[in-house]
Length: 372
Image (cartoon, rainbow, N blue to C red; front, side, top):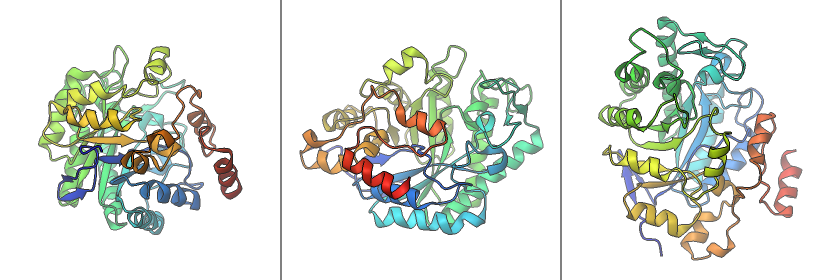
């Protein structure tokens, strides 16, 4: 029925069986200390068997001690977690999807340290980070490359750099959070240098390994990164050999603004940003942001606004979404409720594994019996 949505696409030699991708969504399912838990494996088994072409595992830290968002953030900074990562990659592949691992340094949003590191000293929710020295920047670049190497060794097909939601890569890019006066600050050419050096170091170590980018196109803050500069940065990434660009808008400092909360309830509320970036680059682009129906997503591809459709909460609420859309059973889909008050995010902010309020009572009972 939806020929665009269920057509193949190739990304740097890897064929995706359709245009559906599970984009990263943190739910607090890793074990204490960032280990691969049974809950995490079960979650990704369901996501991979849903029918999507690729699953992007969320937010694996490149430095647990000073770069991790929480003690349940997956670790990619140590070989001690390699066996777990191998099991995770294999679980996804057995489900019929390509496996991609997103790697990240939280920067000023790190919560496993009392003194987080950032490009510049800009207060973050009441905490003041310390500005990175050049030697520390070089060390973090190496950590990204080591984490990507570890992801390949674990059997993942790709790796994704987390440049969204205001984490370290985005902190360097944003004029709001980067006040440096050295080669990493000032004009856009300098502010994008860190991300491009991370990409270059990974490609130098493992050149044949595709590297995607979770891309912040607009911070939705008046003094933050906006489309004029992010379009230029997208071009820089494409020229540097990025495999794909997964576009999003907003950061932790703008998500809760009333106008953004209202905007996020609309289907495809980020699609205009995606279309702007797609017009600038010659690499595949992934759209996300409440893409909830087959007709809307198929039309987004046919209209040339995106190449792939990213599913997060939509897929978590109903892992059968791809099959129901494919089979013409959309009236059976369990939809994420935009008026639930962001209950899942409130759970993870409290350090609790999240569940979806849209789940049936039976599914909720099974989940709690198994994992709570």
